[in-house]
Every structure is written in structure tokens, then in C-alpha cells.
Length: 402
Ligand SMILES: *Cc1c(COP(=O)(O)O)cnc(C)c1O
Image (cartoon, rainbow, N blue to C red; front, side, top):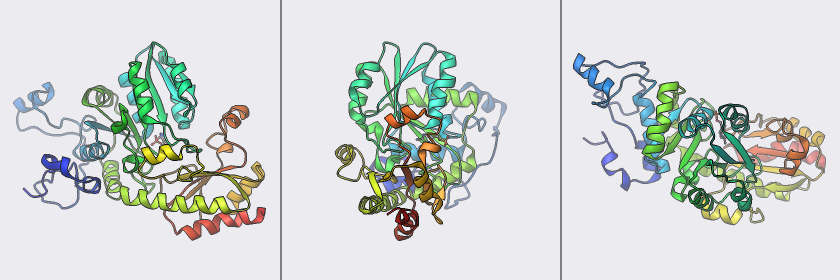
């Protein structure tokens, strides 16, 4: 029946159509919008059916730690957008990374990871995976020879985020996928900053895509969630087994919120990119501002690669003050009246962060400066407010530095 199930002709549909319609099977109530199924368990027509479900002979719902219709709709829709065979939704982005590690690594395995990754991911690798005998070596995201040199016989994952946060460096996913496969490793890409609207790592050769749905997939700061995407064998079987046994699954209500987020993902990402580009060009011209880091700028070292690999340049940018000091950077933060002072990103509301004393506050000074996170660096996750208002808000502090 019309609209009941798109899966038969899904391959013909465009990104925006999939974002709005993929993955849903209407119930007997003929509702137009996706239903939420807040149920922990499911019932069977007979003892024989219960037995068949439990033995796996008959597919179907048993318990919401295993499967839930609202969560499955989100999984199928995101899988369609990333071009993945399988997707499993998780309670958070960190639960997605942890489940991937538990599902695909064992004692004695080794990870080579970009140094420029989310702080909690570093803590997971260093303080927890290490307890189970999985060691991690960190390398510079854009330095191919250091990736190559760090690979050992027991290396199983190459792990990265591109663009990185906060300096928005760009890694060549295709090249790193080739390097991974030559060495019997998997390439795991945390695609949080780009989302499938701007970048599809699986199509460039990556094996696993990770999401924090908390960020742009929701896009409106309403919930915590995550996802892992990849092949049926790696994700649909191995990672899913961890989820259904250990339980960091997504709640049906959050899945519904993220479904609503996906519907406007492409539109929002376009608007984030437009605002970020305008702001980057404005900051470049500002007399109080030194370096501006945004891959859309032609002088950015990753610009050409970003043009090739991404559909647009994203919503995140950073800049340094000409007078590169913590005091003045804090002054610019404190003079804002509109921007949210928070480390969150991927929201319609613009946020401002001083990385050196927040997200990277625990990184030793020398290491922090080596990675380019100076005392005068400010990060903006550009939201969807009127761009003039964002500029005026930053100029309150920047103007006083001229
Ligand atoms: C926020 C974030 C995570 C963690 O996601 P949570 O939903 O907060 O657990 C992982 N990776 C990146 C790049 C992030 O920005």
C-alpha cells in the first residue's frame, strides 16, 4: 500500500527523501507521523510462537533491550543515509564507541588513533580499554607516515575524526582506508562533525562509522544518543550482540526525537555551513583576529581535501586572537550576551568555548601547544541564529581589543 514500506524502491530515492521517509512501517492505525513504542516487552500469539522467537527461528520483537520498532526506524533511516548495511543505535555516542570496541577487539589488540579526538574517547582508550589489554598509540591526524609507522602486527583499528575538533584538520579517509586494509585493520571514523549530509566515510572505504546523535543528528540539543554503522557481519552481528547483552541501547523516545532531527538534517547542515563560512570570512577581516581555522577558507591546509571529500565545510570553526592570551580570550567570551558559553556543538544555538581551559584543560601545556591549541584560541560551533547577531555578539569583545 502507498507509503507503507519504501524498502522495495529505496535505492532510487534521494538523500532528503530518505531522511524524511526511510525506515518506517505504518501501523494498523494509519498514523501519518512515526509512532513511539514505549514498551519494554512484546507478547506472542501462542506458546509455539514464543518458543520460535526465543530460538531465533522466527524473526520479531522479544524485548526492547534487543529491538524496538521506534529505535529500528531510526537505525534503518540512518543506515539509508550513510549507505550502510547495518546500524545499531546506542544510548550515547560514547556507548557507540565502547560497544564497537567490545564487539570487535580482544585482549592483546592494538588501536592506532588520531590524537585529535573527543576527550572521553581518549579516556575510554587510556583508562578502560587498557585494563583489558588493548593498547592505543596516538598519531597526528594528517601525518600519513606516522599512521604507517604506528601500525603493529596486532593493530586492529585505525580510529579518527575528520574534521578534527577544535582545529578542523582534515584527514584523507580514502588513503587511510587503503592503509588499514593493507594491514588487516579496520578504519573506524567518528562522523559526528560532518554527518552523512556532508560526508559518507563508508563510501570512501571506511569500515565503521560512529555517531553521537546528541550533536547534529538531533541538532536541537534535546537528547543523548549514538549509533554504529557498517556491514551486517561487523555491526549487525558483532556490535549488536554486545548491545543486546550489555544494554546501552537507545530509548524509544530518544529514537523518535532523533528521527525528527534527521528529517531536517540536510537543511540544517546547509544553514550551519553557510553561517560558518560567512563568520569565517568576517573573522579573517577583523583587526583583532589572527589565524582563522575553517576548511572552507582557501588558505586552510585541508581545503582541497575537504572540497574532494566533503559536500560542504561544516559548522565548526576556531580562531586565534592577534594578542594571543588567555585573559583576552576570556574577555571575548565574557562580553557575549547571546552566544552560549558551553562546550557542546551541533545545536541550532551558537556556542563559544575556550578549549585551552575547558575541553583541553587537562592536556599538559607543552602537548597542548604542540597540537596548536594556544591560550588565545576560541572555538565557535556556529548555530542558525541571524549571522549579523552572531557577529555583533563577538564584536562586543573583539572590538575592545583593537
Ligand atoms: C560528543 C561526541 C562524542 C560523544 O558523544 P555523547 O553522545 O556525548 O556520548 C563522540 N565523538 C564526538 C566527535 C563528539 O563530539
